[in-house]
Image (tube, rainbow, N blue to C red; front, side, top):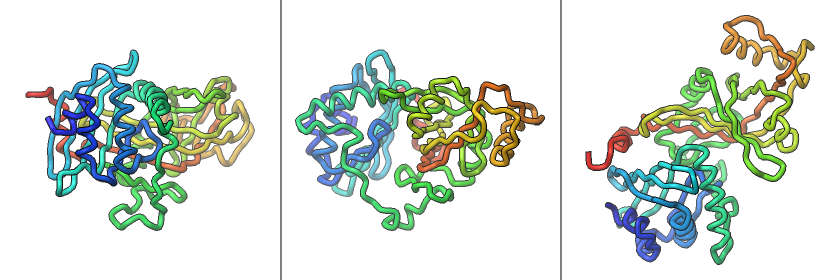
Length: 315
């Protein structure tokens, strides 16, 4: 067990503090932007130890300057599994902790619980209020060049070694059949549901029931997140997360009125889900165009070291 793993198991934040570089960072799906600095990272690690139940490490793998620790835990009635990717410098101090967690419902429960734990701390910091990533687009180095070629879409800055190329993203989004769509209700509570979709190379098109929670949410707040993912074993996990804004296009519900903007998405939808015939409107669904502002991809199959994480500990 690594010193970091031992500190987390013991909830020993004094030991954890000695391991952290003064400029250490922390990133996970449970926080909107990275935490920066030893004190900030300690706050979120403390909140994690207060939030996780039945926490245990189940495997680990090591490479030059990086340790990958697989864990399982529970938040309320939700079981989680994930990895801590811990990067160290030449002196052995931790410069970055990146956490990946699944499944989605467990992650949502964790986000809510972490917000409460952080709010109880003396500075009252919540995940979405933490130190922002101040790197401007013109400060991105050559090795951080965008992994998306879509105009106006923010470049992916983290986990670039396992990111998909633009061609891989395009092929993947065109080939998959089901996405998960997340919207926010009037009280801010999340709503997530699976849905068929089409990708035209730069935007996502959703053929959604007009009388649905999703449609109601988006008429109030156009912000939307979409995940398309796959894989069974941990080292096989791959997917794309897209965030942006949704707009209604055409009649709602869709009727027979001609609409040039819908010609291509309806052709793609018919080819994908209707056997290649003409698109047939059912009088209950309408079209939502999602303009992408941020795209993040991952493909754990690009990191052979993660293959060992799918084996039980000690095997």
